[in-house]
Amino acid sequence: MTINSSGTTVGEFSPDATLIVSGSDDNGVQIWDVATGIEVMTLKGHTESVNSVAFSPTGTLIVSGSTDETIRIWDTTTGAELMKLEGHSYPVNSITFSPDGAKIVSGSDDMTVRIWDTATGAELIVMEGHSYAVNSVAFSPNGTLIMSGAYDETIRIWETATGAELMKLDGHSDFMKSCPSSYSVTSVAFSPNNAQLVSGSYDKTVRIWDTTTGIEVMKMQGHGDWVTSVAFSPSGAQVVSGSRDRTVRMWDVMTGAEVMKMDAHRDSIRFGM
Image (cartoon, rainbow, N blue to C red):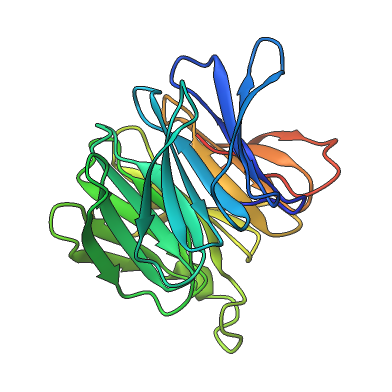
């Protein structure tokens, strides 16, 4: 999850799809009932904007990352703050659980990607390599890889077990190398089968990459402004992207063709899967 221009972190559904969690510039984490739209609970503890939120795979926990440089773990049922994780020295921009819920990965303005133990809150690994703020992080579906996208225009793939950097993908910087960080990578996601990843960027493109070779296999163009969020469909056959051009677009992964364009939003669009 990343923060949108209106100051509210776009919500993530609970695994059973009965709840949505969101965060805001008001420093709170909110839980909402999907059926009624009623706010069920507000979780208070962060002292600055909440930039990223996620449910654990079981739905019993929520993790949040904030401009206050902390990560907090909450009990979904009671709203109690179970743990505060400290280690980042700048705002935490993106955070999520591993597929088994045992680990948490975070990305920060301090240019690091960090892995944490969910049960103890211990910081397990610090991954360094990015030269600017890390905007987006994601675990692969099998949990063995971590991907990060950063303001340095690169995507990096890391080994979860060791924190080793396995690959650096830098195609988003090919338009204007003379202007550093003009094409910040804003959002990244793995395909359901781990074989590919998708990225979105300030360069207005959506790109698909081979996770084994690091080769860019497809570049989709059509958005008229920054691409702020990307995700694969559950089947892996389509990619959906949201943009500051106020459209959501669906793309065919095999051909790169734009399958659908949806308008009507009044501001930048961000979403999470």
